[in-house]
Length: 433
Image (cartoon, rainbow, N blue to C red; front, top):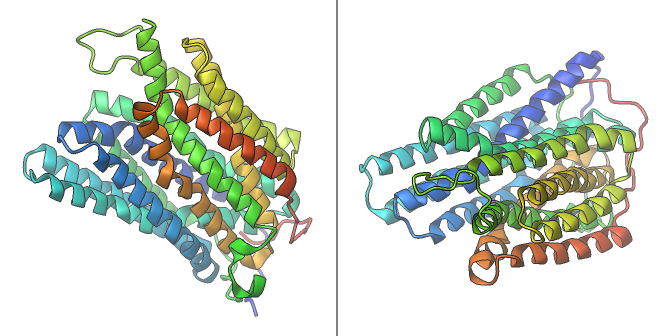
């Protein structure tokens, strides 16, 4: 039997404050990831003269560990509670960034010079994020799912996940400012401090009066929740979306800057400028971030689209973004492409996330949240191959054409296979925080 208890009904400000804290937690995780992917690690690898493949290996291993451990932490949040697992995830994320930055500083200072040792220490520090940092996302999603009715869940999960996607979008711009004004490793330590503060706030301030669910539920003859017909289509879509997101996110900055440079449209291109195009890139990426926020915080609550409709429309918008990116190399076109990308991400991600959540009952929210988090990271294991490697070795437009093809299949798959079942179709929100 699951444990139950009576709890005082929370006020709306208390509920919104709890959700807002988790929003900022996911925003910090998203920003920290893209800071490393697009800004810190590439420059660090070049400064330390490490082989280029080491950068991809560091993130691929971390993504693999994220995929493996996310379902574990989702299940643990059912037993321990959402708050301790979310706080543990932020602590692991902060520690990972501190170790990564420390190894980088010692290497830049000439204290560590043997490059295989540098690589081993960097990949070890980053692996802590894949192992422990993966706990925050499923715990946060399950926390929100516990406290919203099925009819409002798509809207609330969209608001929550907009934190991660917004952080993903603003990370490179924030990193660029910190690197230019302070130091190459400044973004790493800044985000570690932010993550530590948020982790402490979650531990001491996030209300959680309901005891953890300890009921064991067998699904599909004990073969695993991911095999359930109602859940599997959303997870498959999520894996495809993570692959496309990784490919387009990692490739777009290089593609845009190279095309604008070839066309002579970079305003600050000069032999003395080490980072030409930083201003243009910051503007375009900011447009994408604002588009994501608009989609998830304004459009979804007003349009009231189903998870299936969000997945299909998101795929279409992302296809349009991919083809627009490789069309005409002007700043205006790239800006419009990022706006479409932002709205497409803003629709598709909460679409499949809420669809998977709605397909199971209350006792399995931690489990399904772990699987969703794993799906969000699975594509990033292979995205360097179809992204930057293909950009350099096949054709610059290949990553975007590849993404458009994958998205076409995803849209068709969602149309025929994705159906939210509303397994716990309760009209009232649960009373406890």
